[in-house]
Amino acid sequence: MDFHKLPNLDLRLLAIFDEIVKHRNLTLAADSLGITQSAISKSLQRLRHELGDALFVRTQNGMEPTPRAIELVAPIAEMLRTYRDRIAIAPHFDPANSDRMFTIHASDLGISALVPVLARHLKTTAPHARMNVVLGGQREVVDGLANGEIDLSIGAFPNLHESGIYQQRLFTEKYICLVRSDHPLCGVGTIDIERFLQQTHIVISAGKSGHAHARAEAMLLHEIPPLKVAIKVPSFVLGAMLLRNTDHVLTIPSIAANTLATEFDLVSLPFALDLPGFVVAQYWHERFRHDPASQWLRAQVHLLFGQS
Image (cartoon, rainbow, N blue to C red):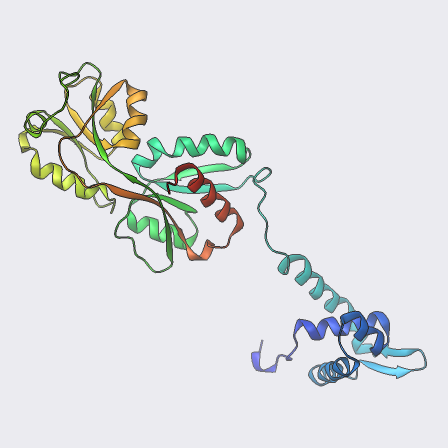
């Protein structure tokens, strides 16, 4: 197709053609469209020029279409119908009836503490919608959001400043400690730094995920004597599971601690070190900024987890 040979037609001209076909009268067509007869005459001249045909000829019965115009009636009507039915109407998302599969990225922390809450909420607000939950580091998140493989990421990526990525703050997280319910530290009151460092520890490794926990991990490994680091694991859930039959201490963000403490019969303790907290946010790509389903999902996440 040679772009430079395409006729210079717009939808307004096609709509004028369609109205002349219906009314066979320029005055009636102009009144129907709410424009002047002069404007419709000029538009007809443009149509004739671009299509290389008279299109309509004045007769005693009105403006009669030429054979070329008759050939164009159906395809032009179809083009206008396509615009009206599939382009002009704003997209809509109906959570009550949608079976949309939402792909949500979350860290191990988010999967253990946030995703279950969101799943329960969707069960009532979007009962037919489905969730596909995926793990991944910062690079995978950026690529997945950009290509549409991930609808939304919930996590803490302080260095995620990629072009096209939007983010919205949900809440600020702090650290506490978890131990098994009959751990020797239970009931001792305030745990000072010396007593904390004497314990054996499970340390969660952020690896190369880009997650904000990497800062806390570095500080813990700097403060805790190497021989007191009993286990390093990449998962908060696995770390909590390992506490059940050991006297280790796990340093963990509070929202996950509260969830996992109930799940594994653990006890939370005040934290002795001054670890930096971090902001948990939701992330999405500008390609889907105005997508109704994505907008609805982000609103639900903010409703559930957002703090003013």
